[in-house]
Length: 89
Image (tube, rainbow, N blue to C red; front, side, top):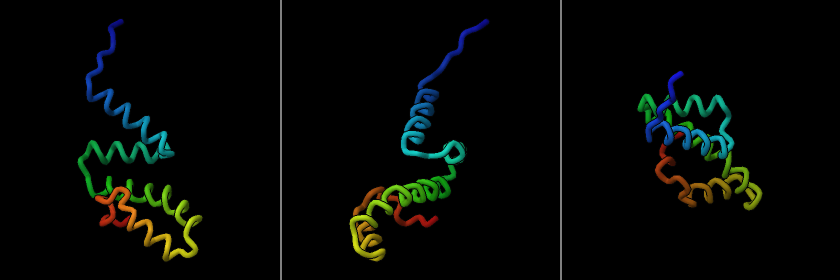
């Protein structure tokens, strides 16, 4: 049998998949993300990242700040993934 040959792009994709998994993306979310990134559908790609970002950071901020409004303000002010703040899920 022949041998498999991988290029740098293959390793970059595998690295991205592993990173998404480590960030608690589900298998379905990873599939969707990869499909969107390969299709160059940036708007949908950013929506998915923004949704996941909110799921990670927002609950944490709710534990720190006394009200939902304060948590939302801190979330926006934090600038985490600032380039995604204009995309709404």
